[in-house]
Image 1 (cartoon, rainbow, N blue to C red):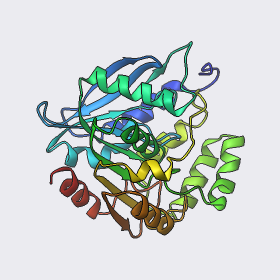
Image 2: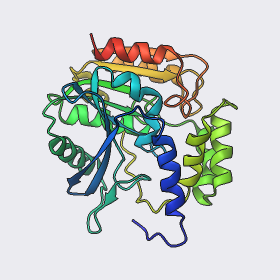
Image 3: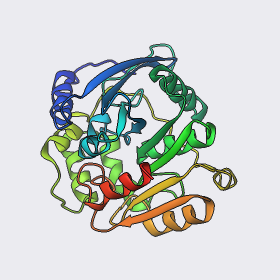
Image 4: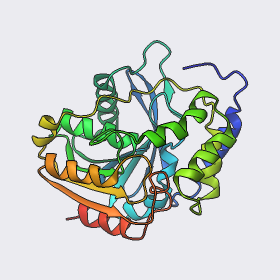
Length: 287
């Protein structure tokens, strides 16, 4: 992890807390030690509720970005939303060890679940967090009771070339205005939550480590997965071909329930969700 340098960490934390303020009353937080550093986890819901661990997407998503689902999910579940290690957020990577492979990420998530005292849990993720969650369900299938994937990337299909080309200026020369322009393009001018958008801008230039982004899970491994999967896809996603993702998931996964949600994009899905998202989550997590 790079040094702070001139990065405005105080501004980032203020933006983070601004989004976190949208979580339900009674939210708490935990810090869990792992081999790759201290992982920050935002927690809400009844202490005796069924556990649900949520992983955010990459970039400036952070665990705070689950605010639109937190209250609904916390009605029946003990919700644990983690900041990815080495990514923007309140987690603190170890100085001498970073996650470089899928196996490293699995070790990190195993340690996180151990630290939370969860032998079994439902697991969910958006975008890159969905990719990590799917890998973990393959790595430890007996530990994942149910798996929720919100428009996951690099799981069933690759990125669209146009998406990568649009992201390139933001990646090569990070700047808040480039982050905003990219998100406004991908979301098609949707009415984005201003506090969430402020957090994405504040995360630009965050001193993070290079994320592990590949490979995609092997089709033969996916065919053997017995865990029930809920796949919610953004109908207007510019990240990948939504219908290709749905078709491949339907071919490779034995127990998948897939819904393509119209009029929502990849980056808008977690915090500007269509009304049916809550219903799908409730019906799947509380069968």
